[in-house]
Length: 526
Image: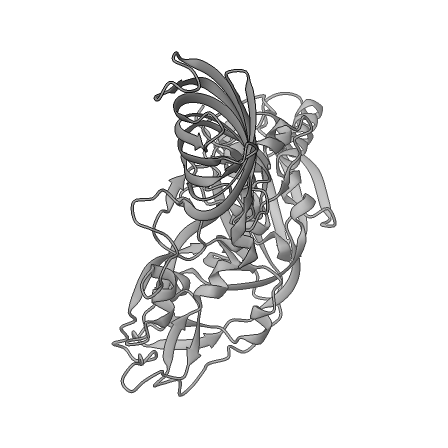
């Protein structure tokens, strides 16, 4: 029998109100259909449970069978629906589980049900604060505040509202936000957003936050905004007129709210090096998510998806896999609107990669140049030689190139030109057996990184008394690197392979060699 979810609403003329959700069952069964399990997975997202005063789970059956058996079945149905919703409910919310037994509706299928009744607390009656004489002002969607917000559509008394849930940061105390409600005559009324401090979430993400609700139709068109003084003559919008035209632009923004409520593990194998989990109530599975190393710039954003995991303990989360970017934890980003206040392009350029100069070079894959000192030793043709060299290097996630010149332990000149390709990279902390979930901290480096590489090198050494050579080699190696730009010792390596002296001084035939060394980052001294 195909299951159907029916939702009905009851509203009181007084301050008290309620919503009722019906869950229907197959004949003689107390098992909750899988379709309802998916629906009630978003139970806390679909309803404003923070305002629920109490909740009842009332079980019913049809009139077929014995009365006592039907009473037991109705109670079992009510308990099963309660277990399905339990994780979404506040532990302090009073819950009643009632068994009504048989009901007398004409359609027997409609009798086999559980009614979930949400009783809301009396809401405070506040006269809407209408803002008069707002023109001419700069209508400015507060993009920065939206980064700290989670939005969800909730149902309450036949209306769709947007619930704004924001991190507890000073921004929401110091700024005045507004939303625009369209009237039946086409005009717009500007009203103040009323932020309240509440404890939301559950388990480890239960925290004190700012919460507000505004009409969904208002949010979809205008989001919420501030009213600023115009930056120049003629660059304002007349918000409250019938012919309002708000210039908006879709831009990427860092989802700081989600980041604050997500966790990660560092993975060893697989395409993704970071495994992320986030509470289901804070993920909009129909929306597109992105990751990027930069919180504001719009280039290099890459999309990713969320997935579920089997098992009861994992039902509270969505999971995702994203790579480490240049050794750092990337930002999770989404797209939203911001307003263009005529000629005021400062904020737009700040988020859209115009008007800023990046310290990078086109064509290089996120790498950096560095001035290094390298100390090491190598063994070749029964000879062990140490060296000290100064040089410059270019390091990227995929390759390493260096030019070095210095002196060796035989008081000879030492020089080298080296290129290496990294074919396998992994974070060393992924080797930790006790892989625990930890806070998602964008921009932070993922500890120390291990890399296997293959490379080639040309190096030489000469003076009047020491046997000179002009060597070319192919080698394999392993290095431990810290990709922080200000790390003192960014690279420790060991490598070995086959070499050939082109002037036949060291040997007239190919020979093996081994080399170890480390670099000191000279950039930290200026």
